[in-house]
Amino acid sequence: MMAVLAMSCAAVAALTRGPLLFTRRGASRPGVTMAHASDALILCEESAWLVAAKPAGVTVHEGKQSLTAQLEAAAGRTKLFPVHRIDRETSGVVLIAKSAASAAELQRALQADETVKRYRGVLAGVPKARRGRWAASVSNRGEGRRNPRGASAERVDALTEYEVAADNGYLSCCEFTLKRGGRTHQIRKHAAIAGMAVVGDARYGDARRNEQLRARYGYAGMALHSWLLQIHLDGVEYTFQAPLPPSWEPLDLGWPAEAGI
Image 1 (cartoon, rainbow, N blue to C red):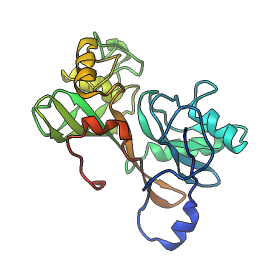
Image 2: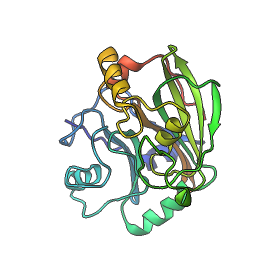
Image 3: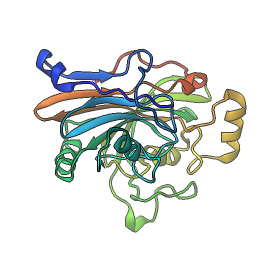
Image 4: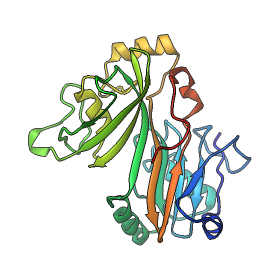
């Protein structure tokens, strides 16, 4: 079951100078329950928007069991508007507006150059360089393993920076920063183009390898997490951070303890 906790961002902002960090610390507190997760909550909520930590296995906005539908039902809201979307099997930070007008403003803030969108993921494979860039153009559609870039006529610019935090020669724990694009499945596509894949990725990865990894590590999900969002909202710089799901423990080869902004 999913506990939902709302923090008063404005109250903290009134007492704090500089970037504000909102993250979950400690165990969930009792609250509204939802159907499909054990590790989600509202990281921060204001009158025009909220930021939630989405669990894996829940869509952002499609269906009655989606994150937005459950948040609407839990709080008696009529409509929420996801500003950016992450895949069903990807967990982590999601920015949500409370009106269409707010959604348009937040979308502009999300696309600003100073906004930081950082993910953590585990790759089946180890990049040759510990730090680098993936700059292959990709389509904005969900593609597949045979052609992750998509049709050449539909490809658009996309840039993902990666850094290897730790590896065991077979798997690598990486941080990914979306520098340009935010295309559908961008990190997953870039990893596949580079000759690797996100662990558990059924679309762009290899089914046999995924089965071997499940047997060896006891991990059945897709190892990609929207870990950090740094953004200017209402004249304030916020950093929203969602801790890695406990289910990732078998894959933990070592992560930096603090957010490296």
